[in-house]
Image 1 (cartoon, rainbow, N blue to C red):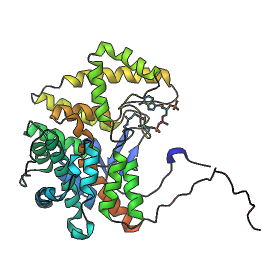
Image 2: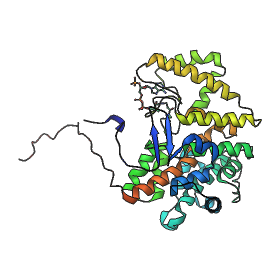
Image 3: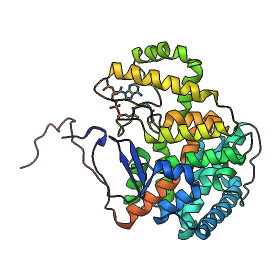
Image 4: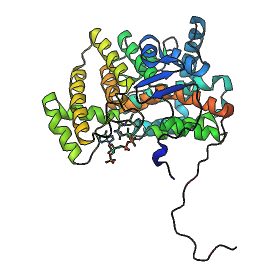
Length: 367
Ligand code: COA
């Protein structure tokens, strides 16, 4: 029997995160994602994923400094990336740029910081290049989110927006056996190296059924424009056989809990004085989309996934649409690296089977 899309197949025991699709709960190393994302920064989430516990202030400062130094080293590498950052697509640029790193050149103790920093610096530098601006050097004294925002956004960074970006990065840093994490684990299971695992995972994240959805969600919100146009727009999409981006999930049968965290974080950003007109529109479109999808497919509950509010929060923070997927990678690299470690510590080679349905040779097999 084939398991279409491996749905429901358990491929690893993990201590990293648990996705409860029926109840809509995400637990990251013993912490509910809401509690984690609204109270901790990206450095804390990295420490949690990489070491198993939230850091004390000294460990937090150490990791923050290590990431800062690694961002500076990543910036120094920009000159040696050839034409990688010329790609028109941010994920293609990231993939090409990261492929320049060599795990054998990086001391084992610095690999996590080095790769995590490189994703942020390369993504931000790509975005500036697209705007015709030279790359902005990192400020190693800043937190990772604030510095990424400062380097990537044409509006620079401030406390409220950095905090919102931290909430986003923590929310999406890890999420069970999603397609890109599985990809990273398959590569790690061959005893390849972490750079290869991250480059492969990035390729999986790029697709619109995974990390490529938030850009199209923003485009959808802009096309809809106002709540009263939502029903007709969605009906037309569905009757044309197209999927509504930001809706549906392989595991969740209820609303993705990360959608709620990002909605709250956007609300918090708005309370600090920043305008986000798209938040109200997104809520209205979500209501209509859920109702329309429910009518069309009553047997399979389709609700908002993380990408729906990713589009809203990253837009409110001031990141351009073309940076949405690369920014997902800025966060998820932390989870990939934790999974690579876990896989390398004890996992077996991941090597499933397939059922051959092609033609047989004309000559019968020798007895
Ligand atoms: N809009 C319309 N229909 C949808 C849908 C959506 N967003 N998501 C799923 N469906 C439909 C499918 O067309 C399919 O119908 P069919 O059986 O008639 O072909 C049915 O629901 C089951 O979908 P399936 O593709 O089996 O679900 P999956 O578990 O393989 O896919 C996603 C999950 C996330 C890929 C899918 O829901 C999707 O494409 N969503 C939109 C893209 C997106 O938001 N991606 C980000 C994910 S975090």
